[in-house]
Image (cartoon, rainbow, N blue to C red; front, top):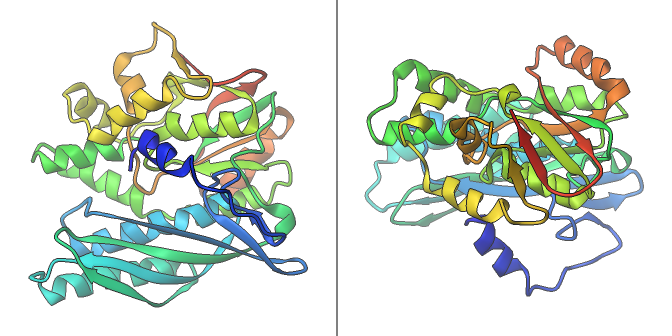
Length: 329
């Protein structure tokens, strides 16, 4: 569901509150957090989508990595997952098995286990996970915790949406597809663990269906800050620029742009910014990276922590007083 339609659906709903619900719809964060005992909390999320690649094992593994990403964005560890699936009646059983096997392998890589799930009949394949993690109640990361005067970092390149669209058009270079798949299969676990080494990091979200600028806009709105992003500093997947320039644009990209350019302070794009780069920053991502902030004085500590875990990291902007997003060359 696009951001505008989702906002309309949620707007009339009463926000559920409970003394033990530490994070819920109040901040529209990446996952819910519930206190189960003093000093012990669980973090929970669910996500699923239609196939983004042709290979069923890889589809299952990417869907699992994408589903678990919300737990890592909150600063939690994955402990349990359940399959959420819809498949056509005529789908070959071995294909369904391969999807489940890919997901199970990726969940095992996370140090967790799949305990079951639920499957229905659907005209188009859909697969994902309901994921439960554990989290320290005093170390929750939130998209609402950024402050002025911080540095903005990203942990994965963008462009999975345009690469997937090129694949559907039979226009995707195999090497570009391999790079995108490798990125989508990479868990955000090491990045999350690196962040948890740093008590200065409190603001984090993951970049998925709303694109980099959509999720950055949510962080700016919830935190009450302005984000300034350098377009030239945003990392891109191999081939992504060419596919975007050639018009391989997913439908979700346009919805993201129309909504977030005018929502909650808006997005001001400097006329000197390459239009193709600006377009890519609205590209819907699957299993994208973590977007987080840290005080300027801690920037080198962040780089050291990520280097120690062999995790990728790019500095892409800053935070300041004000509202919305400014995209500069």
